[in-house]
Length: 306
Image 1 (spheres, rainbow, N blue to C red):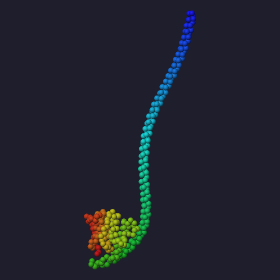
Image 2 (tube, rainbow, N blue to C red; image 1 turned 90 degrees about the vertical axis):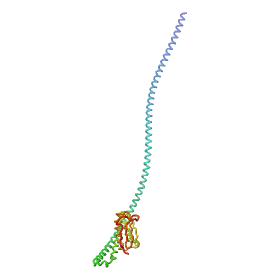
Image 3 (cartoon, rainbow, N blue to C red; image 1 turned 90 degrees about the horizontal axis):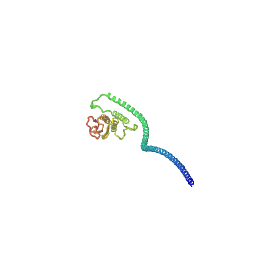
Image 4 (cartoon, rainbow, N blue to C red; image 1 turned 60 degrees about the vertical axis):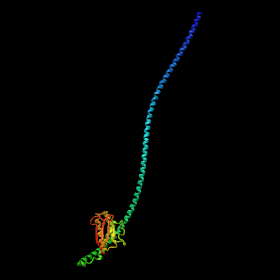
């Protein structure tokens, strides 16, 4: 009986030992498995930490790139603003340039018009020169005739001088032919002065016309010549009724010229009054409004016939 109990106890002890061994092996396997898992988890943690570090580094890099991108964006915005401002400036410059081009086009058109006018004026001047040359030849012929008349008059004058000198009461007046010759020479000289100093077109017929008073015309030409040569502007106020004789007209014309030349030093602009006072013609230089000028030598009296 005791043997059986002992055997049973041994069996039970064996079973318990087997069960304990199995449990031990299971626990060892479980521990090994847990250790493997722990190692795997630790490796995963290490890997995760590495990835986290990489992610952090990447995030830092991305942040730096983002900061650079922001800076680049700011620079691009500033550059865009400068480009817009430059575009506006260039647009204004183009507008100004367009206006300048339009103005230059207008100036060019005006210059072309002026050039055309200048060419036309040159052509007219050339024609006027040709006409003036022809007129000069005609004037030269007239001058030759006048010289011949002067020689003739000079011969007559010499003949008169060779005669005995009579008393004052018996002295004859100057020969009418001599006076007419001198007046013709004076008119030729006045015409030459008119062509050289006054006329716009020297080829025009001349200042003397059939219906005009030649003495008044000669005085007006003398005033115009003073204006062109000296710059003094004198208006002729002619108050003489009727026409003067050749001799009286010659004296009046020469007296007026001398008065204009000498008076231009005193009176810059004024009026030359020519009036009849009995048996005299009074020539007086006055101010622009006809008022008297306080200066000597601005009035000349010329004795004339009735």
